[in-house]
Length: 254
Length: 203
Image (tube, rainbow over the protein chains, first blue to last red):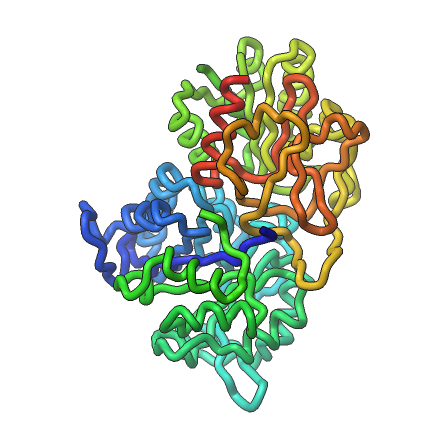
């Protein structure tokens, strides 16, 4: 085996609670992100991702508690994104137990934050999250605020800049595909992964197991992030791993 | 089994403490250098950049306390950056001296094969070289979680306890006497990681 492609279940968290419910049985509290993360940990998720969509200050405080409780019971890496605006926010997440912090809007608005956070904590724990929409053939623009706000920034050019500034990883989400289950935007993934040396996480659109395979084989992604195909029991992590292995992708031998 | 985990300031200790507790250890967190005086075993975790982490260890007195701990041949495990800090020096961000407990230096990983990306991030093989007490009874094809851009190059090949096939192959475990270093994160490496921590607790 060589470096394994990672399968990353992602939970959207608001005010300390999971936004989209998960159909797991045997959970004492199905809305508690730490509980759900523990289930994915038991299924050998390669990493777990929380994306915080809390708007309020109180919500952020609750998130820290969630991260702390998750890190104390999950012995697998945890990435947390959403609302990271300053170096201090990254520090708070890492101290709470996140292994990596994902910076989204703030990295677009203030790219210097990438340099500062990377110098302080090391590139390995700085993920830059890029939400992109196709605006022409083979051209994607970065959008913020859940896809509502256009930034005028070219996604591929910014991806290159982010890695040069010290991003250790890129979380690339297609806003066109997010929530559709129509598959990842393979052209977007390929356009970025072929131009940066850092690993790329595919996000937005996974609807079936072949989508995971395509993201790695055709899109050049090092990891696949998905929410609903795992949350709603459509597929287990073991099925995802088996499908990728059958397609000739290196996965963790379990 | 008692084990002391050093609070290095930049890193979260929750996962490490809990993982050690899962292995049956009584864990104490060292807040100051004096806490190492009577420590049977010490874990040095690490996140961040080499020069800043080393400056903190020197400033807080942990560096000398760790050297004394190693001189007494008491078990020490450095994890990730904590492993790298065992070296004589590191070249990251202009360079800095390390603890000097395992002779060698820390240099940047360099891509050797098409498709390799940096940082080296994710689950990869750890292949024991010789009889490595840390790797005893770890699952076959034992995979561990890595996230790093630099790697340890020991001066003495006898200090190499395991390697990992990435960027031409790098040293993923060093062992010199009772001093050990793991480039990966055992506390984030599920069952294989728990096994390795249990092995350290038995060392």
